Amino acid sequence: MGLSLATAERWVERWELQQQRYAVDREERFTVIADVVEHVTEGRAGPPLVVDLGCGPGSLAARLIRRLPDAEIVAVDRDPVLLELGRTHHPDAARYVDTEIGAPGWVWALDLDRPLDAAVSTTALHYLDRDTLARVYRQLAGLLRPGGVLVNGDHLPQGGTGPGAIAAHVGRCRAARQRVFAHEDWGSWWAAVADDPELADLLAERRRRAAPPGTCRPAGLSPRDHLELLRQAGFGQAGPVWQYGDSCVIVAVR
Image (cartoon, rainbow, N blue to C red; front, side):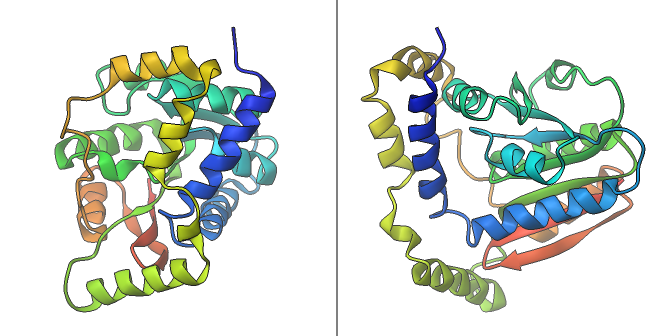
């Protein structure tokens, strides 16, 4: 039995608020990603085909489909709770796929019928280690059409000293001015979800899939690291198009 719409709406609304703690100017970052996808697909025949990597409850997919109502979006995640929230709250935004990015067979699970126009992601790829990310970037380069783009909006630390440290400080100041730290955090959101009996079965499945303790940590790769891996993967051009603090949007052109 699926979730009720009321339950999905309640938890997605709280998700949107708590995620503001972790992405400086989160809404603007979404807008920039949509700007890029709209630009590279403008004037092309047929509906744009986009894959959303680490889609969570459909936050980015829902915004993209409002900007590009003819787009076909394939939204990918391994978390059964977040996927079901997305399927219920944003059912028309995307085709949701339950698979783990970088795992064997994940590309086949997408079931694509033509080359991608864009691969997008937000607040997801920083968890992939260097070797896995390099492999995923190579796979995505093979899935994109010539001129297609990979657009990654994520937390990408620039280093602990000098301009990198100052950039991080600027981001924290911006977040404090927006009062985002008044919202519940990641741990509090999941603790509250655990008390909802309607989500009990999905949470049990999430616990069954959980990675071993200590293995799910941010890889700490810098924007420079990502750009190097993208070029090695076969992307002709790659660079940042937006940044505030450690929050960046990097675009790579196939």
